[in-house]
Image: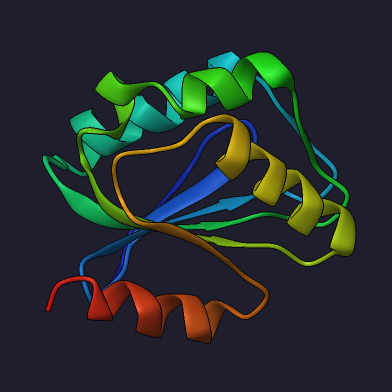
Length: 127
């Protein structure tokens, strides 16, 4: 049975495929402290050194500018082989694309509207 870790604003689990799935709760505003909570789960609970990451944004949530900058921190991103962002609204898609242009990352990252497509793309990153 998979274990799901719950932080104040996210659910985190390691999928059978080895993908780390992070889902933000609906209507929350993600702040820097929330990213730190998630990172602690990755390192201390899941023992992640390097992995594929699937980030599923809940409905009506926000990410502030300081958190976007922390999210893009190279030290934080060393554990990411590739990352897929799943968004459910035009607003989130615009925000995600703005983030990708403002903070270029060293690992492959792509925005999706369907989780299944994101997972398929992540699995291709290992080949």
